[in-house]
Amino acid sequence: MSVFVMVFFMLFGPLAQGQNLVANPSFEEVYKPNCSWSSVSFPIGHSIAHWESANAASPDMHSLLVADSCWAYADGSEYDGNASCQPGSQLPRTGSVMVGFITTNDSSEWREYVRNELLEPMIPGKLYSVQFYVSLADNSAISSNNIGVYFSTDRFESTNTSTLPYTPQVEVKQIIGNDVDWVEIDTVVLASEPWKYLTIGNFRSNEETDIKDHQFCPWAYYYIDDVSVILSENQTTIPTVFTPNGDGLNDTFRPYLLEPESVDARIYNRWGRLIYRSNDTYFEWSGENKTGLNVPDGVYYWVIAYRDRFQNEYNLKGYVSVLR
Image (tube, rainbow, N blue to C red; front, side):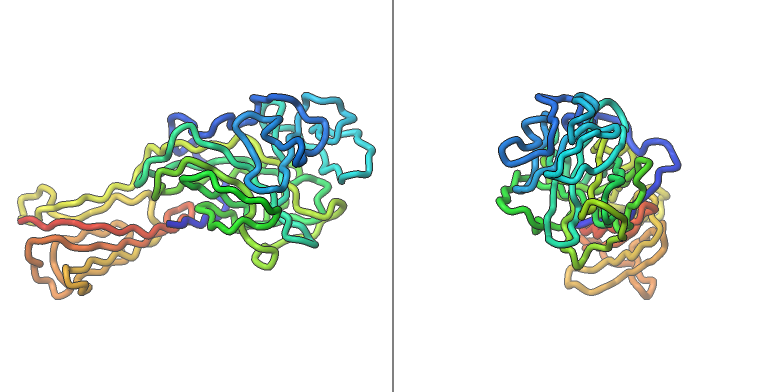
């Protein structure tokens, strides 16, 4: 199941309380501070614990832990070499370390991704709050959209530097062009499998990626910090049985959906015939067909497509039993 997400600027308190499943979420657990950009011989996993590249390209460590003459110094590097364009100046959002990665290049399909093995698998059928912060490097020639998060059960391998052939469950469709402040990305996803790995980057081709021209370095380069995946307190709840017998107890099939904005609910009988449909945001099915007659006891198949206030789109399917 894919959930495509628009940027949501959080105006409220946190969506969830609980353990952050991301290991080393703020990149502060460091093996060895890197003065230069990452490379095949010295990848990001040699610098920062629990994080690695997901392909043959090289996301970078930026920190306040090295000399200001280093390419990777975060707060206004004095680097004067010509081997690689220095991205710019940005303080980590928290602590002393952040990561930088390229989302697109104006002349190739070069992509950089950061990957993390979660502390424990996500629980299928549960909602999770997903949050991270990004800021465009101020020397980027372009800015882009399509920063995505892909959850997977397995640690896949890729030996190239181009776009990974996966569909992210989270995808930011707006161009993020703020090169001064940290932009919060905060949304929810519904786990459809026991996902164990998180990968962040641009999973779209150059043709599918919108850009905006800026200056200097010939790519869209973003800093990232403070990544979290937390089991949400608010969960989608859908009953598996109801008893429409008029006793006032469990008389309707009423799913609890997480803050829905639009809903398309359909219910089918055992022969696949549509017997009920509703677009009510908080619909209830009382066990009647389209003509108002009671359906017989039995098992019915339901499909619910809905969009929540974060603009996440869900396609849920299941069965419910009618018992009078």
